[in-house]
Image (cartoon, rainbow, N blue to C red; front, top):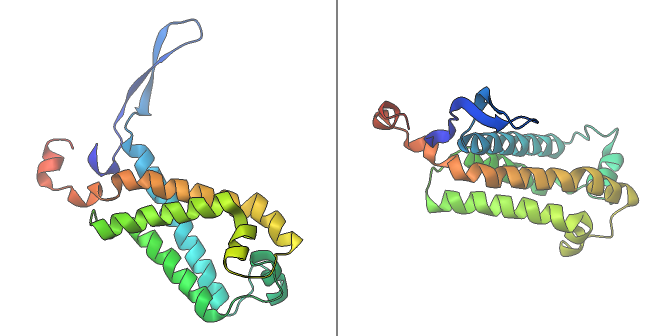
Length: 185
């Protein structure tokens, strides 16, 4: 099914005693995976972008103060300035828009989606300690390392995988014309 719409059908399964059975209304289209990936990628990236906008505006939320925020998110005594934080927000929100299908199947949009998926997966695999070294930042605090291990890395891997899964249907939804609908595509 093009456009990421899933067909609901009876999905055949085998029971424990070897009898044939079916699951009525089961989603049988790989397009459902693409739609779910796009939805998760868009939602996650948009949330990351909005959170960075909140920080760029000067709020330490959800931390109690700027020092606690700095320790939790960068592992140092101070947070980056409003400019770099707003730039991260813009990248995340832009990534959400392109992940959602902005740009259609143009090569630049496809490249952005692939780059976002690769960057998120790489960040999830190498971790924040390596990222801080690459950025020539001081060694991060123990709190940051713990949060990186249990929150940041898994979230990056999940979002990267979601963006990658969503790529297979990102552009198809923009090409659904009346003829495709008439033929059930």
